[in-house]
Image: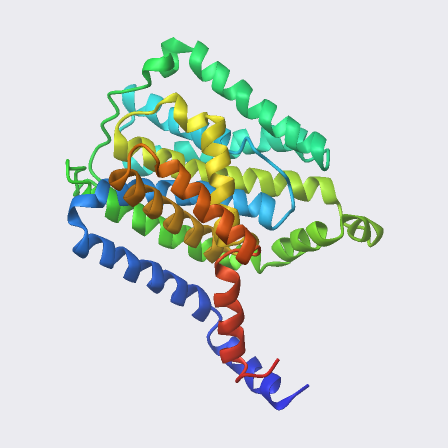
Amino acid sequence: MTDLAANQVPARRSFPFAREAGGALAIAALGAIGYFLFPDDLAFLTRLIGISFLVLSLDLVTGYCGIATLGHAATFGVAAYAAGIACVRGVTDPLALLAIGMFAGSLMGLTSGVLIARFRGLPQLVLSIAVGQLVAALANKLQFLTGGSDGLSGISPGKVLGLFGFDMYSRTAFLFSLAVLMIVFVVLSRFVQSPFGLMCRAIKDDDLRARMIGVGVYPRLVVMYAIAGAVAGIGGALTAMSTGVVGLDSVSFERSAEALVMLVLGGTGHLWGALAGTVIFMIFEHIVAAANPFHWMTLVGTLLILIVVFAPKGLIAPVIALYQRLRHGGRT
């Protein structure tokens, strides 16, 4: 063991949560910048946070487990509908609605994961699309529950902790969503470094070798799908509470495809990549769509092509490489 490695061991034992605390502080700092510098765009920033949960969830199954999916918005949308229906029918406590969304998303993730995780490659991708389309069709047909094509409206959550009411400027919704994101990010940061998370990485790298050493690949993938569904469910519930309406777009194929684009943009297999991809894509889309409402898709497509060509591992990869180089004193 080198002197550097020897010196690092006590530091890791003394500060076991230093990395997670740093991540939470970074998110809080970015949230403070958005809150004070862009007070008129808090509704957009709250929506951005809600979508970031979907992309984080997708990163767990795609970036950490290698599961190809284009129907992941189903978990997000089912949770949004579950929280919205519960709110319309009398459950107005935001924390209770958050728990309902998390449970609904986890249940949807578990149900779809049992089927999707059994296959690999192209069949897996096709099945994920089929699951997403089935959920979208049910949301459209069950009009008495979901509102169909008109959407589910009238979602009015109560005060957070009985003190802070949701206002038309989205201040409470933004701060509440930001606080939940900080907590979830810290938990996920520990989770992906746990033995379970590391074994999922090993399955992604070489599932055959994992089977040869006695690892139960299929059960782990199903469990990860359920956990990812819970994360997406939190985002769905937050989105339903902050917007007051849930539409078919929440379970659409386009939502799943956009989430995958955001993940590839930021970088798969990194939680910061999922967050960075969401922030960059949605802010760029927001600005370009406002500046050029007729040709903004062309500009977005051009940006994505340039990033995939010149940064195939995502925009976060060079930042992580620089951080590791600085952390190790420039040693390779």
